[in-house]
Length: 204
Image (cartoon, rainbow, N blue to C red; front, side, top):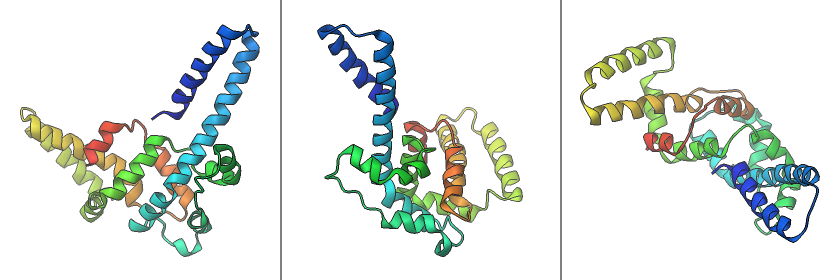
C-alpha cells in the first residue's frame, strides 16, 4: 500500500464534499491540503514503523546483521519501544518522532520485505552458505545465471524458477552482509528499488 496515494484519495474525497457545501479559495485549499496530507502521512508512517519494530529486531538478530550489536545503541532503543494502540496517530507520532526519522527512508515495500525474509529465513541462510556475494561468488553467480538462461530459453517453468532466484539474489543482499550499526542496514535496504508484491512472491 502506498500511504501517500491513499491519504491523497481521502483528502480529495473530503475536498469534493467540502466544495459542494461552500466555496473556498482554491490556492488556500491546496496549500492546507498539502500540509495536512504531509502530516497524516508522517503519522501513518510512524505507526507503521512502530508496528514493525519487533519484526525488524527479530530479522536483524536472526541474520546477525549487526557485527557487534552489544555496542549498537539504536538496537537497544528499538527493543525498548512498545506500541500503545490506545493512543491516537498524533500521539504515537509525537512519542516516536525519532523512530520515524530512523526509518523514513524505507517504504511499505521495504518493511514488507523485512517481514518476508523473516518468514523465509532459510532463503537467506542458503544464500549465505552459497557464498554468492564475495568477488569469487559473484563471478560464479553471473556464470551460472548466464548458462542457465541459455539452457532454459524454451523451458517456461525452469525460466520462472531462475527468474525468482535472480530477483531473490538481489533483494537478499542487505540481509547477508554484516554492518556496524542499524542505520547502515537501513541505508542498504533503502537502496533496493522496484520492490512489489510479485518480488515478494518470488522469494516465497
